[in-house]
Picture: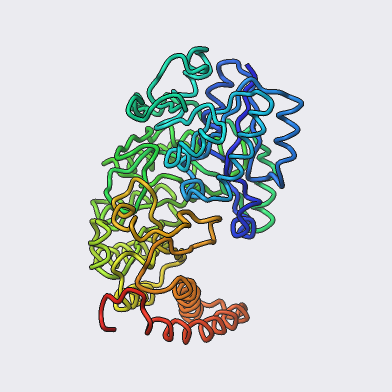
Length: 479
């Protein structure tokens, strides 16, 4: 059977990501495609990371005429989890074109899970709900499933009422049984060239687990839900070895929502890498409380961790509690200090605009950034997505626009304490403030032109933030 895989995420529709020049191959797509290729199917992927338009897709549909088309997003990449409307429209275009050529098309993505009727009404033959690999296997191997004559869990169709739907497909308990991603299905040389040209090294992506058991009430988990299943440390070390020796990777992004959660896993991972005589630097995402558990940080260091991204979110304990974060502000400070002493870089994810956030809370976050001065900083605003308690809390405040168009949109979707323009200016102001302090403390002085650039931004956006914060839309305190 001829099977085409595409993704709704098209980097050319996301200008910020194009400028970053940090492309990662669609890991989830490559795993699913490898599974079907190993069974003998003729599989092709049109890679949205390097598409410049839809011409390649149109030509493939018209000339190759696949038997099946899966719009199968990489759910290990945060960009696809953002449910961007630019990508939704790209998916609708591909659905229409497949339908015109009478090619069955099925969709697997966070956005399709949240808004299945939209995708079905635009012509999709089905939306995959839950973990995708076993569902696409059913679609490929069973005509009655493909036609819709037999209902299976994890596949939503137009002719099935929501009350009759058999439910989501459960996550695979042993993910070591799944094949390794097949990077030969994409132009890996283009990835390597872009990384080397703009950053001087080549980074590739690896997933070691699926799901997250924590309960942050703004975090959407439409695919795996509240579960956590991990690969073996040995399997992960094998993949590190393969990516380094076969494809020339000299850095790894571990895409997990939470890395190294299983007790003892990091120790086993460090040993497995040492046995393979491999030291490959990587970045990962963790939590402050997890980093303070036992020898977690030393195991990260021994296994080659270069950077830990922390979902710090806020420097205000009031906001952390409101988010159900389960972390104390003091733990963020301590984890940052311990990582730094161990020679591991720390990076913060920060979000402003959470419901009830006041100017005092914003200042607490600024103070945390100034005090701890992480090595990298990512700033966003709170983004309510369906299926989360946060979404339910603010749904009556949502406006006509419910999703960002691209990853740099950062528009407030609900009535925050301050105006949309305030949060956009705050983002630029805090980032400039951070960059200036980082430069003054660490240099390098030969890049002083960058300091001048951030000083100008600081001087422009600072007064605007101070002015607009005096006119809150929804006052939360007198300051």
